[in-house]
Length: 114
Length: 108
Image 1 (cartoon, chains in turn red, cyan):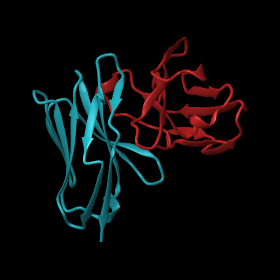
Image 2 (cartoon, chains in turn orange, green):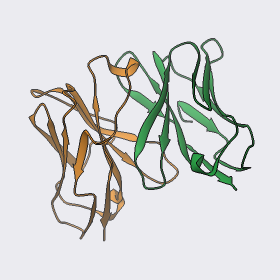
Image 3 (tube, chains in turn brown, purple):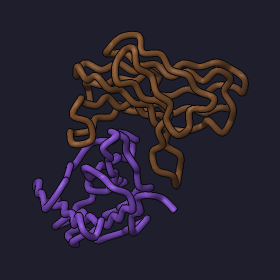
Image 4 (cartoon, helix red, strand yellow):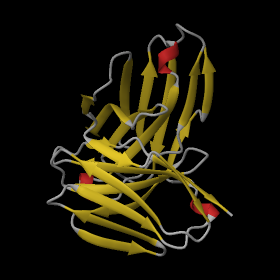
């Protein structure tokens, strides 16, 4: 969806490095989510935010942190990257209507940790 | 055991065939979504269902709330339908349970 951008789209980094993945959306959605996708596994929730002052951990938040700088921006940081964080990461803005509304996803960031 | 199970995991079909992908869920949900993930990785929403049936072009999605089961059908399949199809259930807490996806390849 062109209204959701993620940067970088691809990144190769080394173990122990700090890395930030950024997400911006122009859809005006209040809620934003970060997921990771691994081969053979479903999308798994890392963190989510219902508004700028609200941050919530998902099922696999260990090793990650987030920042909601504005309604339109939600960043995911890996404090000290490790190889098992190699995955495809998706940002997903979501309307206040939540699960009964169309779901949007960013184009994804492919992260490789060596 | 995953809250959302899809079958089959992989599917190869000849162009023109009718395709069915199944999704069963074991948790209470408010809505069931079907997503399509292109080979490049991008994910788009195909359908959101809370009951009954929806149709969009050659795609049809159905849900049986009592049986906790949904199906995605593709009629007259085409190579451009080749993608991973993901089923996701959304609960009243506005969180999703995702299936692991069905990888579809349509051969010309």
